[in-house]
Length: 376
Image (cartoon, rainbow, N blue to C red):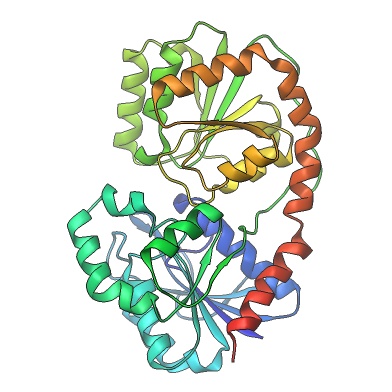
């Protein structure tokens, strides 16, 4: 099967978080299982450009990736060269899989593929959630969705990464079938050594630092508890926003409990294993790869009900689900501290449960079944 993956960013543009990693992991697995996969992407890397060869397919971990220059430095990612290449070559592929929405790469690529009568499947990856319509540029998004987005998406197949996202898509669109398959997640090759037991509750925030992640809520909750704790914040983001968070931690008088360690990649599983709980009180997450990464090494999670994997965590008793408010987070943290035995149980069983559910063979077969159903 010949599959074209389109995403405005691709590794090593890790600044964009989970979607970049999920798309690259899926592409690599498809190649491993004998399928022809090409990726069209841009040189986007935040406000900078990736230092890569442009316009010529590059072998990136077995996947042929074509990087194209973008004309804009913002999230529109307009790339005329990518679109010209797509217009010329799209019919060489059995299907086009587009990741994310609300950028000109996705929207215009979708239009071209449909004009050329090539099947299209779109993975919104949270960009079509109710939160996304109320967060930024509300009026423009709603207008564009009505005039352009909805007519296009109703002609596409939709891939959701969680049942929460599936429900949102069913309310928003009248598309062709919606498939729900979890993200392909890179799991550790071995179980790292776990941290030593301590009376101090070791919390970890491991994600892109962004207003939607709920760090302000977490800081407020921590300021209201008396239990001993340390919070490690691993991630990058807008420097101005990070500075405002550090100022907020001083206002709450919790800065002495925080460790800002920046973006981590190579030793992330070791870092996760040395903490008691991964905390992600987000206002919106269609999936959250980091939840599975944390559970795969036995570290329990505290996530908001707005995280796509909340249902999975709750069903398998792998952590705690909170509301997106200070009181709920505060009460949950106190409960975790008062029940250390639960952390030990999760540490023992979470890797087994997670490795079974996110087995590479199982997931890739689900994706291939989806592709086969939409390919002519």
